[in-house]
Length: 157
Image (cartoon, rainbow, N blue to C red; front, side, top):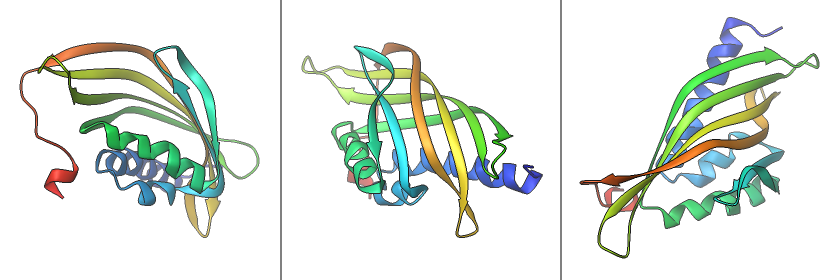
């Protein structure tokens, strides 16, 4: 059974992931996962489904460090549905939008927008909900021109 308190805690976990990724606090992101968690990512633009598997916190950190190549991101959680998994854990479907803003060689700035869905599995660990498995599916992408942006996440730290 998933209680209202469980749903609230899982919702906080999902939103904290987005916040920490946008602030490039990658080690803190890794702490949201179980030690033996799995993160499965797409390989855009070739493959939009989850195909690249990263097992364990160390591999998850390495995978997420690739975000350092993108000056600014903004992840918005649009929806979260959580259900019990029948084994004391929970499964979740998270819908969202991820903006990836970067400068182009021609001097313009572009926003690569991903409309996405995470298929998550959550388990309790040390009294807290953590991500046991997260698989990212990009539903579609678009590119937008950006008129102005802040310089970078790191420049303001």
